[in-house]
Image (cartoon, helix red, strand yellow):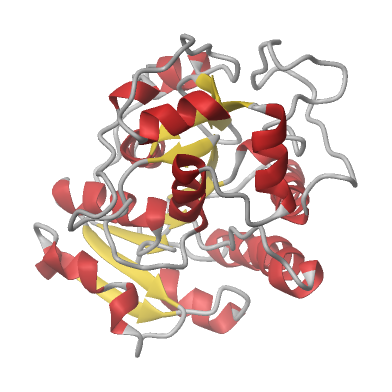
Length: 325
């Protein structure tokens, strides 16, 4: 780890803290003694965050209603936080209106968020949960000029294509907003760090049925292709980079509690497997070909002192049990 001091802080605000990744992030902060505030788009829908109330130290957990495009509501949410994690942008593949469903909440929401946290004296550290799409909107297909076996890391030129899925384009453009904001504001009092996970795998903490990540795992496991994106994965048996959800949460916690990472964006990735072998992993079977580290994780290993579980070792609960993935 690059010699920074760990932050001694008391309160973390986690936007999207009841989602697939966010729930694990909430759990890590609670386990480490933080008071935690989690956002909910509609606080009356308790089923969206009820699972968080069963976590250890949940007496230190607070749920607050928040629309990420409402500047005043966002200012109220972060006003007493030392750390803020932003994982509240939409992740969806089936889209009717990309502008309103993806681009506006992702890009405009990021712009509003950066303005608010930079004006909030209590906030010392921000971590944005970006995406591998911030580096390559073609993911899981290779960036232009590369083959699927070519290594790719943070030093490679970022690639965006108008032919990429609108979700990927929105995440790429939101990351550019972050980079430009940091360039335009060299004297910020808040440190801003991003993490960009590849496809995130693992068990869901909740019984929510609207998670794209868990839905994709279900489709891969059962070889179901409900949309053109999933059809493409199966048709080409794409080499797909993945990472464990608990590892992602740990990396976010380390990025949030370590100073000296301002302006950095870390790829979070374990190995790449073909879709057919990922299906075998999700069914508890042995893979036919060993995984490859295509999307580099050396920066996260060095700066965040991270290790990443090999994908076949991820404990995935079998369907039909009490805890669906």
